[in-house]
Image (tube, rainbow over all chains, first blue to last red; front, side, top):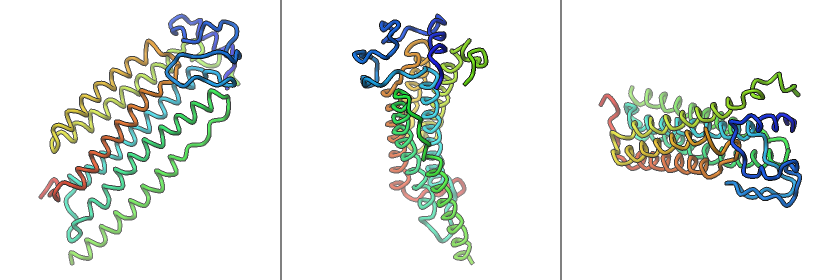
Length: 160
Length: 105
């Protein structure tokens, strides 16, 4: 966690707009009766708004995962719509494409929940947990790859 | 722990905001790409996703001057809902469309 002085240095840096809770001059978040009228839920007594850079980094991480999800959805749709059919296996493209689309929607939902959890941990000064998304993504894509291999071999067998 | 001088962001904190705004722009472009990809088979869905990407672009521009460092759960929830909706539409297209011939029928 970055120290308080750097945070103040940034707010004095003029182009950074004044925050909603800035009337708390000097108190700096330790006042339990403080209430932010910002977008999020009102922080509890032991929560302080984290350094803006952590909030931004957390937001970027979520946005990157959402793009990953969109790419998965697009790939799944492209496989179903654009790929030439597997000879002898008419449902082959849907077997590969549908899990990719479902994986995309799962990734964006999980990444939003993880974003919210990390934001909460940052406010409380707790360590942010390790993301489970890379593991989920790796396992699912590996399984889909194996299915694709099986389909390719199967359609080759049926062709001859 | 770094001393303030070690980190360029202590003298120019706008960089984190800049990266985030650029990340929003990339997200908007990704949405536009999906909209363009769907446009041919489903014109209405494609156009609505393209409109949505314009909205997301606008949200990214808003990240720059105001709301610095505040968590923005509503905007991010919008992204999550939008991606889920797009994937459900894609799922419907994938499952309900008659067997497409592929690029080379």
